[in-house]
Image (cartoon, rainbow, N blue to C red):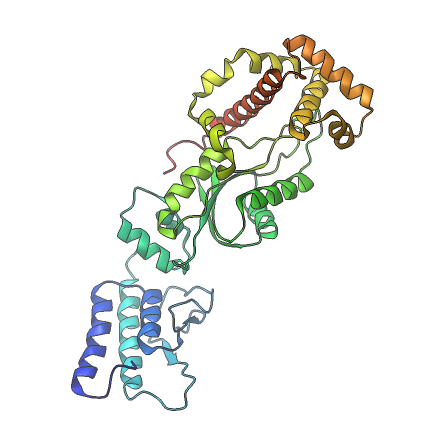
Length: 377
């Protein structure tokens, strides 16, 4: 508007602007946002049957409340200029805005596409099967900041709402949207947190709320979270794919990780390429699983896992709160059964790898049973 005067050409340009919006089948949210961009000031609209919606000068959503399905009645529209002097074409802009919203209201009587904030829009953003232009439109309708990077998170949980609330409390960033995708919950986060810190904070929060005691397989394991890397908002499908792959490494074993960042996996991610059947048939992993079926064996495997995680006998004793001789006896018995010498770097690496394979197989088996790796994007 700052480039327009009150001459006939300027009037024509304003009219053409809104006519183009109507002809493009833009919904009410897109029309109000476009009006704010044109006016270079906040613009609001409200139907008698719905709450207020306002967009700022940069096209940012000022009120998260959604518009109810518009009625055929004319909506109230207004500009929020900070300057005392109005633009000569303000009244024309409001008239054409109201007309465009009226057309959109009449068009909405026929079932149309998803509205602002609708979960289906997040599915479009995360899917690599959608056209790029459709993802661009969905990004705008979701109110995402296209200049900031996003990361996707894949969450396997018995309670999607509880998991979203837990992640919201734990993340230093802001959950933009979440949506159920099959038996997974997909989350899109705009944050500036480093991968390791984000995964560690989420893991600690989940363990605090859902501790898994030995021999208590029936307890609520809490959410498992796979975390993709930060990318351009238009590359969200790639981050979503990473998040689902990282999810296979989450585990509720004694010292497993409940939240796993794809960026930290490195070469371990190659394990995700192996078929689940191949992992299940690994002799060492099968032997460890067999040992863990008895209460004593379960304690021994948990001790080995703690030893591999913490890296020393002293630290393992401190973390497990048991006597030094108890930890040493458990590890010695397990060494004898597996034919390992944990003082040897090769055997210690083998033990760590076998425990990782075990966690992947346990998690993958449960996830496969839940069909979360079916036709989801």
